[in-house]
Length: 437
Image 1 (cartoon, rainbow, N blue to C red):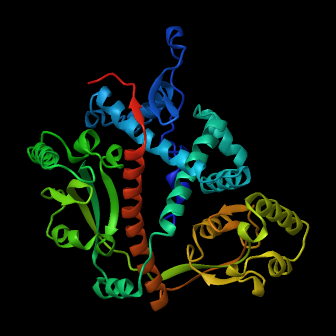
Image 2 (cartoon, rainbow, N blue to C red; image 1 turned 60 degrees about the vertical axis):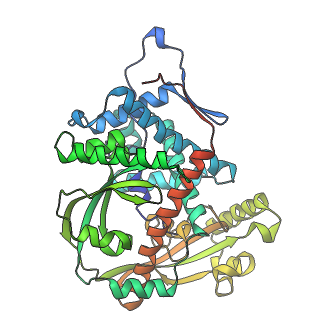
């Protein structure tokens, strides 16, 4: 599955350089506060008070000009702690199942981030220092962000399938130049098998929230920050721009009838009750071109060589031989998995970015023609990728089908991973040490 968004851009907040959840160092704590305390216990792990304070400071910085949107500090702390809890659960689960981000991969991502900001890696590090951000802390937070992305990809990859009939239905229903809509939502969550009392309480709460927004006593964004149980609560409930083809079919008729600024009635869904706001609309841009890549790859399958460590060592040895000038096609034919076209020397002819999976696709935009990636740990084994060429082609029928497949897959992946996060959170032991409100 595609990572779905530009993973590098997602890592940048505030200054354009900050991973999610990271804030510039705050003023030193008084001497009486020198000892850190525990904000929450999560299974066998903890979130420290200093981590929570940094994350809360990050949110307050984002809303520096809209402080009225934020709830009281004790409510905000609980919202932020819940976000940190879900992030930590994902990171720990990723490590438990063997997902890793190597130093070489991390360096490659940082180089790409620096390049996208028109800086050298050295200039980028200097910029971080000017912002008061320790470089090692930045690397650590960026590594955590990548671990979460890989966990998501690993989880949904085997669970999300898109059938040809779904693609046909999508294309037949697609409006050639239909509008795109920017949406936001508020969720009042329900457990998996709620009681009648829980359902009634959730319905009263969502109706009360809608009433507050409808009377103008609170903006939708502020209500989302304060009351929503969704993962995007601290983003003001922001979902972002969607074409109608990327919206679950049961909502399209309702949203089509709404005007910008309007809020829907409470909707009962699989996760609980939702309010949806149509923020604004715009004309959809016609897709006339699509980017394709041609590459060469070597895949070492741990199951074929005697285990994960043997596979990693062999991939590193092959990468070193390539650096000395050996022919990649020869090495691919001898060592690479047949799944990656080994007989043809590992050549992957023109493909869209995520056609061969997120691990290869993620390297394509970062590499230049002729460059060889570091060894990449993927779900299938250890990869080495060489980008051969890039081109833009007219969006023909095949490209439209591929775009349809990716759109459906992304929608399904979001729904599937949201279910996984709810399950992960419900199964974990989480003890908040924050004072009761």
